[in-house]
Length: 336
Ligand code: SAM
Ligand code: SF4
Ligand code: SF4
Image (cartoon, rainbow, N blue to C red; front, side):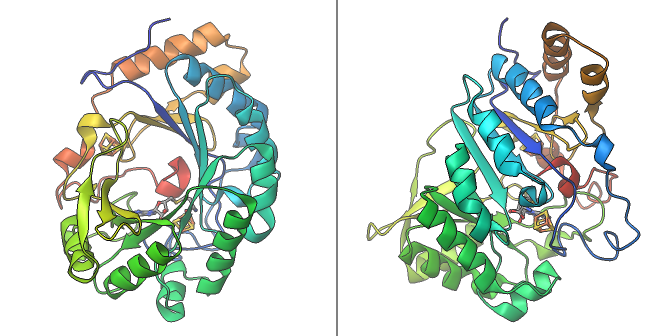
């Protein structure tokens, strides 16, 4: 079958798979406690896709051109036996890149089993090196050292390269930009700064809270000179820079100030099996229903081809303060 392209000629290359909507953190920009508190109803277990279901869908996606799979959530490492899923996905012919994004808290015991199962590389999120700031952001009193231990475990297990994601929110952790850049440059990890985004409808986003990727790069450049380097492949989301002294690279993900919808080749599968063609979508398409009622691979393929063929998403190019409160789905549900 031909590989589908959407209404703007964008192919389908990446699939992000959310394996759970639950998380052991309550980052204020993602799962604020006031919303994701004791009374919040997470997906019931029966609603969440089983590993076999995820793998079957992933194989259908790979047949349509997907080469890269990223496991995410919620926090993917809270899903029981996650390494089994990694092993199953690593065995799908045609998967060229298999990776996972985690808050790192459970990595000290999960890094080696994940590597052994076939995980190739990993992204760990960390927003500050200062305990008071980091704890205020994760809102569960989790210390910086716990994440650093996770990164060390990933390194020891041979998960390379390690990328570190830092969401920057003005007035909260912008003072951490240069110290974080220096720290991870010195350890040979690639730190990527993410502009604070208006994902979901609960994080109180305001444009004033966004520090632009350009400003971030300028702050680093003033201390440790940088030069831009080209993307490795079309559709790469990070704008990359190398340190002029040859000591490594860093990047900025400018979803707000310099959107990259024109080359967006990503689809997202929620933990309960709905497909979203944009991080900022308000509705998804249920794939679990057909999957559980006996649809064949050809039937699933036809649904996906139709869906991707109709895709016109370019939210970040249209964003304004007025669109921020739209009832978009939460990032913890469809996956970052
Ligand atoms: N729990 C895992 C983690 O935190 O790495 C994986 C899921 S998380 C939703 C994926 C990524 O999205 C993380 O790097 C997180 O920092 C980022 N993220 C969450 N909310 C965001 C927001 N409002 N703006 C920008 N990035 C955000
Ligand atoms: Fe959890 Fe990741 Fe969201 Fe933080 S960013 S609340 S760790 S899912
Ligand atoms: Fe892709 Fe939607 Fe983000 Fe644009 S806003 S880059 S279409 S996910």
